[in-house]
Length: 242
Image 1 (tube, helix red, strand yellow):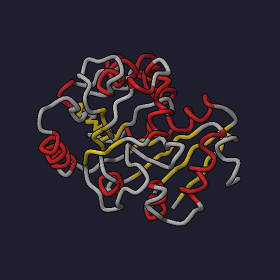
Image 2 (spheres, one colour; image 1 turned 90 degrees about the horizontal axis):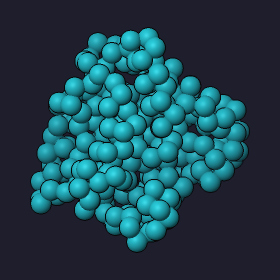
Image 3 (cartoon, one colour; image 1 turned 90 degrees about the vertical axis):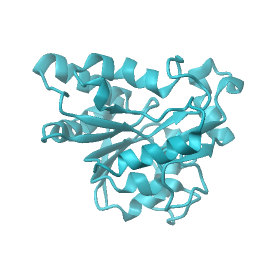
Image 4 (cartoon, helix red, strand yellow; image 1 turned 45 degrees about the vertical axis):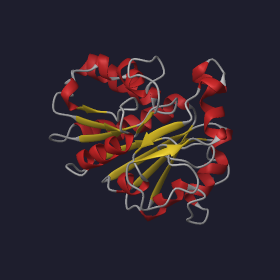
């Protein structure tokens, strides 16, 4: 079931997401599923500001990230490990031992998939943060990913690599070709999900997620089967469903 929230600009979109996050963090020992990319940065900034201004603590929070590139080291400037520390973790009081991000630079990636999925099954994620790709992917679950997928290795579509080239000096040849990601079934185990999307380039994907047929061709359409999904959009991203 979708709760659609439409806000006037990115800051207000982030503010709406933060309202939900703040309520979750106030719970006892919350577990957060976190995303990277440009969509959640405003949310993370508001989490940091709240921590600094109001003393909201993350000492009892556990986090699990959706995904990581394969083939770059953890300290690479564009690894998701680096992204999360620079954009959130280094500015709040969460213990490093409570942070879970898949390893993309270990020797046996199949074993890493199994290990990460096993860690996920030990908890229930209270709030999963998602963006959505222009092709309808969530996490790095590209079109065609089976709905029953668990944590797995995935080749990245050319469109995804083009979309992410902006983080690699607009050079697609520098964007990794594979990633490790939570599967769609892994994501669906979360109690509550928020999807953040802004911009006209996301309008078709948002339509496919909310109103299109439920099909692996639009991986986000699996969210039609979840009981508690809040989709937070600006007017451009909402243009096809408003």
